[in-house]
Length: 274
Image (cartoon, rainbow, N blue to C red; front, top):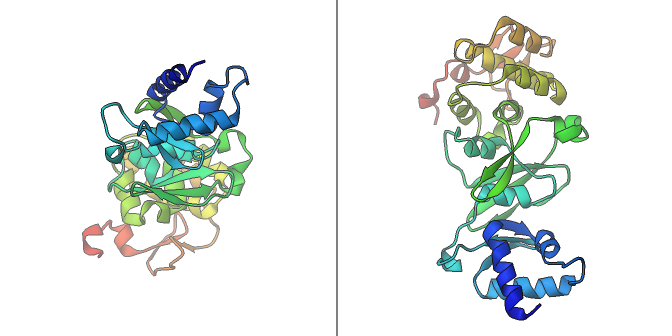
């Protein structure tokens, strides 16, 4: 294959792969394994130099749209997060944002993975890895509640709204705290509550189960949380009172969930909190 043919074939690949890994590029251009990794490296380096692609980090690239200078190009953060590891899943606040249900817009994107990775920044975007909780790490599909969605010419792996509800209540600091959690979740019109309960069971945290139950109880009418759903979560709640979060902020005991909830969360008095 001539050098010109290689360039043409590469550009055709870029047009259908807005974000891609070195391995994906090499496989598409391997010609049955006849092309070496060195050849692929050289091709990618030439395209980076020509401004056709951006090097996001080692082994990961983003395509620069035709007619746009590389210096002015942006990358889709959800596609990048999905490609950071083989098992990466957009999660927490980033998942809410992907689904259009985040109260605030962030430039920080959390993603789940089984491994241990380092956070990194690219084009003023921050990508933060979160190791999958041990209770679901070895389960099929990381415990479920993960979907693939077509997006910006690629495919994003992201947690469902049901799993995201449980995840942000399990780790509110990855969603900006209780106000952001509440305001974001209140933007969701419907949850499959059976799926919420199923994942809550798998996560195996009594405190998280109580938080989920408390949130659903507080929004019982809007989310059509029936007694059976709440009873199932109540069985998973702690047997002794627990604080809503690690700050151990004083509050009112909500006996149904054995949760000590700060008054401002109980009353949703967000405007009074600095």
